[in-house]
Length: 246
Image (cartoon, rainbow, N blue to C red; front, side, top):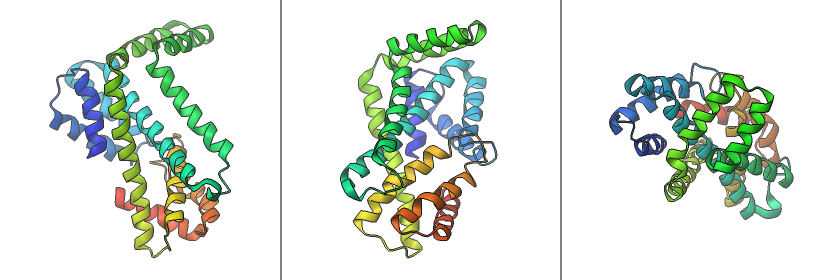
């Protein structure tokens, strides 16, 4: 519900002329299609198409949905970084600090390129040199639409805080499922899950599976043993959490 509210706030700010209840409905339709389209972003195409049919604003809807995704991804890696900071030396050994820091830096630089006019123009100039033509024209329009939100930094900051809450709750789902499976949990292991689960979230963004099935479980078998959760238990944990979320 909070994730749907976040997307609704973004599009309402752009004065799309679609009722909040309708936007919530479209958001849930997008979540449904995420289960059947490659990657964890296939449903976004459905959402954009549905809103565009109602408004005719394809570029603005795409820009708002991209902003929603980048805020969510940025918040997710920040959740991991915050938990790792609290853990200190007890951060899972399979995820070294340099890797976590690089992940956070890469996501935040991508977000900054979207929200910063100067970085956006620099990125566009580089892409124009590489490809040019219609690609650069579409990117110019997309970056121009982002000005709708870029101009109000306070609004974007409040959205970022909401995204942090949303992503924290999504990780909490894994913790609650682990508790239901009688996996021993103490404050340290809970924080370690708050480091590792966001890594799974980043991994399933890649459009190489349906809603991350298989990818999420494979990565879990590689990183969960670092905190004393066996590969078999990690697979069961991820599948059960997936069923709860679906």
